[in-house]
Length: 222
View 1 (cartoon, rainbow, N blue to C red):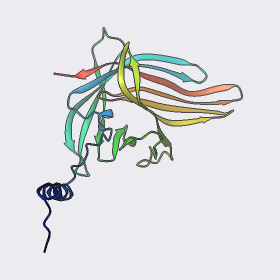
View 2: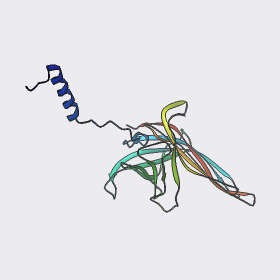
View 3: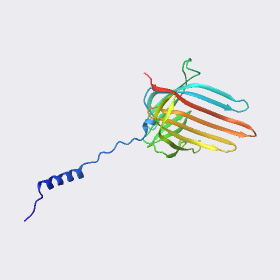
View 4: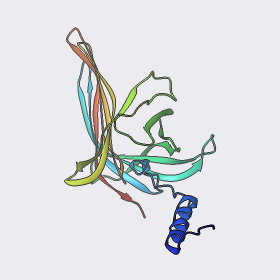
């Protein structure tokens, strides 16, 4: 005589079959796109401090404002943003448009075209220690960018931003050259700090440039 499973066994079998047939829903994965916001009319204002070394050393300080002004399809058929760049000496002066740059996000990169030179500023997904050639799309020579301090807080103007990351771009220091460059990005804001030092010391003479951008405020323009 054929034995049939009891009612409890029958329902257990249905549960197992249902679980086996159920499609697994993909988990939401944070790739890090929020570190490079691409929202129209978003802006960041920076304090820029720079020094130029040579026979006569000169120092300059001014404010820089970057606004994502308009969007367009670039030559690769991808959505890109026009970055309007304004300058003024201090908060009492009106903003003066200086130039336009371009930026875009692809599924794997965040790119900026600055003075007609394309840089890969970030790569996705963002992972601590990840490295890439930031100059892969230009002719400036290979620079190995590396993520550091991913997800750590960062303070600007007395405000603490919950999550940031640092992109170490250059660290070439010897008896003749000092090449140091890095950028800090914050989630929901974008670039909040930039530092570049590129000087040469020969026969006791220092030549080159050193500058820092520090974010003062950010938001969305009406």
